[in-house]
Image (cartoon, rainbow, N blue to C red; front, side, top):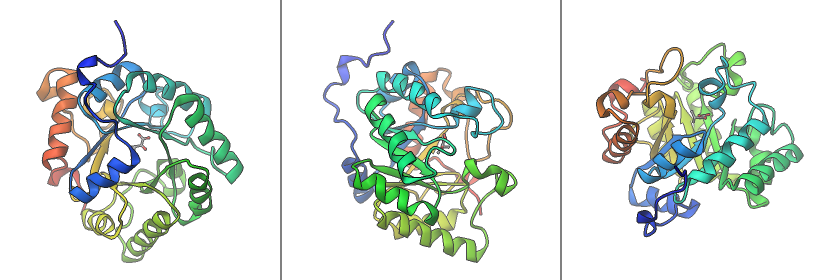
Length: 276
Ligand code: KIV
C-alpha cells in the first residue's frame, strides 16, 4: 500500500496562495481540514480538500494532551513531513506551536524549518496586533502567513477556557481592527475561531484576504474543522461547531467527501454550528 496520490488526478491544478485569493474573489468556498499523517492527507487530497493544516491540535487528538501547549517544533516537523508525503494538490499550512515565535529570530528559524524540511506552503500563528512584527518579518522573507484570531487555544489558560471571543462591542471592534492590521502586515489568510456569526461575517467582508471560519460563520470564505472531530474519533466533548460526518457517510473517504460537498454548497456550517 502506498500513501502516494493516484495518477488519475494529474489534471487537477495545485492550490496556491494566489488561487485561494481567486476563490474569494469568485465567491467559491475554500475547504480546509487538519491532517497529521500521509494516509489521511492522501484521502483529503483526493477528495479535493483545498487546504490541509498540520494543526497543533495534534497535541490533543493524536497525543492525548488536554491542551495544545505541550506540542513541540519537532512534533510539528515530524507530522508535517508525513502529511506532505500524502499531498499532491492541496496547499499545506503548518502550525507554529506554542512559544515557537516569541521573537522574529525564533519565528524565522522555526517557520524556515517547516518550509525547508517539510515543504510547508504557509505557516499559521495565533495572535493579533501583538504579532504584527513577526508576520511582517516572515512575509518579507517569503514565508506566507495565515493569522488566527478569536479563540486562540495557545492562550487557553489566560482566557480561562475555550470560550467564544468578541461578544462585547469593544472586543468585536478590536478584533475587526486586528484583522485589518494583520492583512496590512501581509497575512494571506485569516482563521477565525469561535467568533459570533455577525462579527465573522463583518470581518470577512472587510478583508480582501480569504477568511476561514471554525465556529464562526457560513459567510466566511471557507471552513476548517479538525479531521478527528468529523470522523468521531476525538477524545472528550466534540465542540458544538463541529459535526460527525462519518456516522452518515459510513466510510472515512465518504465522510471527507460529504464535508467537502457541504462546505462547497454552503450547507455547512448550519445554524446549530455558529454562535450569536
Ligand atoms: O490546530 C488546529 O487544528 C487549528 C484549527 C482548529 C484551526 O488551529
